[in-house]
Every structure is written in C-alpha cells, then in structure tokens.
Image (cartoon, rainbow, N blue to C red; front, side):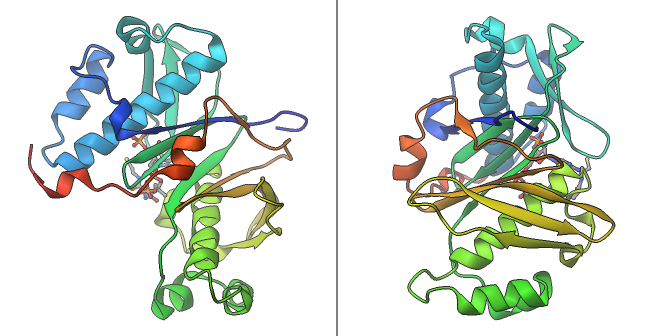
Amino acid sequence: MTGEAPRWLALGEDALPDGSGWLSSAEAERAAGRRHRKRHTEYLLRRLVAKRAVAAVLGRPVTPVALAGVEVANAPGGAPEVFVDGTPAGLDVSISDRAGWAVCVVGRGVGCDLELVEPRSPGFVRDFLTGSEQRLVAEWPPDDEGAPATLIWSAKESALKALRTGLDRDTRQVEVSPGAAASGGWAPLTVRVAEGCPLTGWWRRYGRFVLTMAGRTASLPPVALGDPAGLAAASPRHSWLDRPLR
Ligand SMILES: CC(C)(COP(=O)(O)OP(=O)(O)OC[C@H]1O[C@@H](n2cnc3c(N)ncnc32)[C@H](O)[C@@H]1OP(=O)(O)O)[C@@H](O)C(=O)NCCC(=O)NCCS
C-alpha cells in the first residue's frame, strides 16, 4: 500500500435493496441458506458494501444487474475474493459489519474491522490483550469507557484479517500500538506480529463506532468513497431481535 490510500465505504441496513437481483447466483444461494435473520442480514449487508465499494473504485454502474456481476466470494479460510463478470478483479478487499452497519476497504493486503464502542469486561482485557495493551487501557482517560479496549480489539481483528488467519490464533500474538487521535481525523497504528514484520494502519472514531485497518505496507490516510456522516451519526441497530427467524 506504499503511497496509496485505502479507499473505504460504509453502508447501513437501510441501503439494502429489495429482492435478490443484485446478488450473483452463488451469493443468492448462500444468503438463502441463512435461516437466522441476523446472519442473513449481515451477509447481505457485507455483500452490498463490498460490491458498491468495488463498483466505485472500478467506475462501474450500481444497477442491480451490474452489482450482480461483482461477486464477493470467500477463499477456503474465509478471506473475501472479488470477481467481476466471472474474472478475478485484481483488487484486495476487507469487509466488516457491526450493529446494522458494514464497511468495505479496498487496498492492497488490507484488513479492516468495524466495532461498536462499548464497555469490555476486566476478563476480556486480561484474556485477549497483551500486558502493554492492558497498561494502555488502564491509562486511557476514564470518561471514554470501553474505547481503548474496543480500539485495540478492532485493530487486532484488522491485523488478523490482513494476515488472513482470522481469530483462530491467540490474539496476544499481535500487539497493537495506537497513535493519538488527530483532532477527529485518522490516527496511525502499528501492530507487532509475533512471527514477522509489523503491520501499519489507521484508526478513527465515527460516533458510537471505531473503524480500524491494517496492512503489511505503509499507506496514506484512508479516503472515503461515500459520505461517512451516516456512520458518524448512526445508532447501533439490532433489527433482527424482533424476528430472529426469517
Ligand atoms: C475473520 C473474523 C476475525 C471475522 O470477524 P467477525 O467479527 O466475526 O466479523 P466481521 O464482520 O468483522 O468480518 C467478517 C468478514 O471477515 C472476512 N474474513 C473471514 N475470514 C477471514 C480471514 N481468514 N482472513 C481475512 N478476512 C476474513 C470475510 O470477508 C467475512 O465476511 P464474509 O464471510 O461475508 O465475506 C472471525 O470470523 C474469525 O476469526 N473466524 C475464525 C476463522 C473462521 O471461522 N474461518 C471461517 C472458515 S470458512
């Protein structure tokens, strides 16, 4: 990512189109197999944000038919892979969703994660964070409960996605050092990895959410593909709670 800026898009559940004409047949099949509304909606939202982000980067239209031609499949380990009209798109994407919102980042070797800032238990901090991360949590201003542990957790997920390993490994094998927030803008972060070169990335608060990204090479600060104001103003949403089964 040296010299390049990762590009990113956030969309909320309200953006989901009616029907399934915007999905490829394989995606429609995977969606149909999700009986629980939460998993179904999250899958659709992750597909929509990734397709729209790829369309924006490639300058493709966003009609249902055009979106169906952008397929977001998964490698055997779960990492996303994008095909356009049946051919690998040659773009790396990372996708994340939380509480009714989803984000897709397009950038070489990038991993991203969206989290809701909320209190984290002492057990969470003790079991998942390294000693130096725990010290950082303890030293964080007390009026921002949950923020440092959420940020560190999110950056770990971003790093593990960039490494394409996911959370199967011990989260203490990656250690996050977040830079100071820069007056509401993007702040840098580094992630030390037990077995190799550190990753670098960015983090930023958007209202109730924190967004992180990480990759193997340094990048310019992320560039939004749409207006991030919706995410900044969003209330966490758990629409599936009313009707858990489809
Ligand atoms: C990867 C992981 C960290 C995602 O975290 P999460 O908080 O559950 O969910 P998020 O919304 O942030 O991210 C989900 C997206 O992560 C991506 N992802 C999943 N596994 C990944 C991996 N190994 N590397 C990079 N990205 C991955 C996918 O794009 C997924 O969305 P999709 O399935 O709709 O394409 C977590 O699911 C995990 O570690 N899983 C363990 C590995 C696993 O179960 N693999 C599945 C094998 S099929």
